[in-house]
Amino acid sequence: MRLLHTSDWHLGRTLHGVNLHEAQSAVLERICELVEDPPDGVPVDAVLVAGDVYDRGVPPVESVQLFERTLSRLSAVTTVVVTSGNHDSAIRLGYGAGLFRDTIRMVTDLGQLDLPVLLEDSDGVRAAVYGIPYLDPDHARAALAKGGEPLPRSHQAVVGAACDRIRADLKGRPGVRSVVLAHAFVAGAEPSDSERSIMVGGVDRVAGTVFAGIDYAALGHLHGPQAPESAAGSVVRYSGSPLRYSFSEQDHTKVVLLVDLDASGPARVTPVEVTQPRAMASLRGCLDELLESPEHAAAEDAWVRVTVTDRVRPDSLMDRLKSRFPYALQVFHEPEGAVERTRGGTTAVSERDARELGADFIAYVTKTEASEGEVDVFEAGYEGAVKAQHLAEAQEVA
Image (cartoon, rainbow, N blue to C red; front, side, top):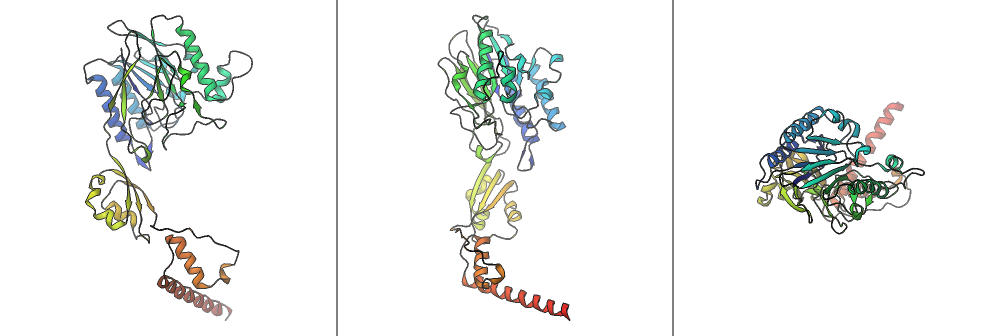
């Protein structure tokens, strides 16, 4: 049996103010092509989407339409199982689930988590696919309690309770392979800058061993593909997001995971790269070097983050950078040899020497020690301003 594992589409997300709809359409097109025309000819029996379909609870109309088109296209050739993540509105994402065709299974209600989607491939391999929607401990600790006191207020407790229910159901299904979709932060995995914190009570992680007894755990939430530690016999994987959503992900190779399950034995996982619509790069240097050096040619069509190191912030900095890097999204000014000046005392500005005041001001703006010439210019300007103020005051009195 072959499954395709993906997660964290975040439809509707922007990147530093840039609308990502076209980029998201491109990567979802790639996923559809992989399912419709598998690279090795082995058909995909189900697509697993492990949460965060949308980036927020009320997504833009164009994102809803993109999801609808993608879901329709995938479900025409395979079964699609979708769970909700911490960014999704579970109620909105799951709306109409009871009306969908059998090849579209939306699992957004925690009351469904031990009611599996049953699959069987052409070779007779059977699998039970369980979806665990994102579990907010404050709500799930009561809903998943077996009676009496609520569960402890932690992700470990609620995800563990959900897996206990799944293992209990599996006991009545001998010879069936088990797959769980879950949206959680598993200990030992590495986050990036683009995930929203799910910390509760100072803790946001669950142990990978919580999925003990499950053949394959298809995880969502973290945006980098990775394999956290798990119990013996279980394969636990993050597919990561199919699109880069922050500069901390610029070196990620974005993938979907093809998961092969035989009648017995461990799941076999094969990553398939998802080509990115636009590269990402971080550049650093003085402005002239950035604008002229041929070594930055590859970044001209990339989304870039630029740190300019000139001693004084250049004029029209963003416009000049965009003349070469039209997709520059972030620009920082960090002068080489910057110094941190500490200001002591509580002397009023009006009582301070003009040269001292100027030196402090120039160092604050440029983050470097002021030169004598710069202080001279400041002092002259300061004295001119004081004279002008005195003249204006005299005229008002007159």
